[in-house]
Length: 183
Image (cartoon, rainbow, N blue to C red; front, side, top):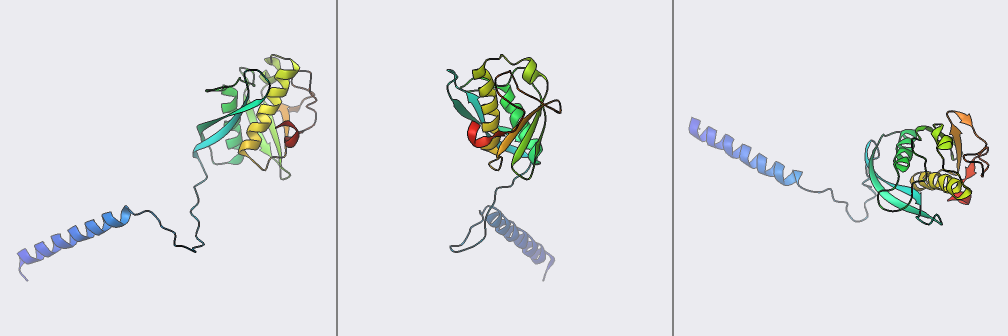
């Protein structure tokens, strides 16, 4: 085999390999009928579509808004980030239910379906008051957590690590709120 024939053969092999590689890399994974394999969407840090709950403009019901946000991979971090987004207020419709300046300090989950949400003092200090305002603050937080974490059965509010009696004077917040009663 001459040197020229060897070069031509080598180029042909590289071209064929390149074409095969291109054809194979563009194919989507295919599941055969009857296959038990499952393609799962990766859960972790990145963009996630979340459901946020706000009061409607007449303060008569909860309305939801979907939003895509960047979230961390841990469940407490995701919950905190989702509630921070709730605190930013609605982009499309509805009325904000968390007072301005309120920070979400942390969210902790227990094994029994309880969520403990620790807010900054502004949740109470900047709350506009009124029983309707307070119940929609409670309901929007609970509906947002339950809508994104279906395993949550109750939500307990804390202010800067301490238990509270009430947010704005109308509803007893000394115990956890059951999700089914406040959604």
